[in-house]
Amino acid sequence: MNQWIALIISLPTGHAATRMRAWRALKAAGAAVLRDGVYLLPERDDNRTVFENLRTGVRTGGGTACVLRVEEPDDGGFTAMFNRAADYERLIADSAAMLGQLPGTNATEAFRQVRRLRKTFDSVSAIDFFPGHERAHADAVLQDVERTVARMMAPDEPGDAGRLVARLNIADYRGRTWATRSRPWVDRLASAWLIRHFIDPEARFVWLDSPGDRPAGALGFDFDGASFSHAGAQVTFEVLLASFGLTQPALRRLGTLVHYLDLGGAPPAEAAGVESVLAGLRDKLDSDDALLTAASAVFDGLLITFEKGMPAP
Image (cartoon, rainbow, N blue to C red):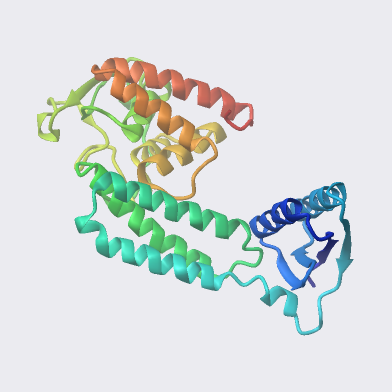
């Protein structure tokens, strides 16, 4: 049986600003309306904090408010009030419409649109207290759009190789030359950083104008036909982690960040800041070696932060 809390508020006429602040907070929290001035949420610590803060705000604004624990009716009617299926259906429809319009859409604008859709999904998901299959369906459809847009933004990005990731011996990959496409972005930069710091400290990197320019004997990464590239749902960075048994929690968390910035999905908290910093470095530095050096400092800092178990600033 689910536990519930109710917020009962009353504000005198003329307190429009306080009323609007309360309404916005209730909407953001996903509260259901039982009747005018009576709002409902599942009993959870974060939901109780929302109601307690609103109670304080309403009282400070000259109104009355109380928070009560309530019981659900036998028919389970409270739970039905939090069904988010219609929200997910709208998101699926918007995603499908966007997918149909992509051939004539500018890649940069498509990128903005798909980020807005993902933000909408995250907002709905945050207040989906009783998720069903609709959430998974909406996420899958949105990921299809994100992958398509990612290919538009970088047409030469590797596709899904559809292969299993084999476990390899790090000792066999020391002192090697590693080759990838020039003007690297997040997955290539993070992969090169990972190679030099955890796999091959003596690694030499070659930046290719075309994958066909790979020198004989060089190990390719992050392009179709390379030794290490996308496999299944994994980006190259994640494939390298799996290939060499790098299971540290901080590296896995960094892999989640790289995956999002390369293919989309649920955004980690630090994603926007890291993306902005790397984009600025890429615009500023013409040398790919210099870009890797600068980006490596960013990944070094993230690793230290993640090892401490702290959110990135």
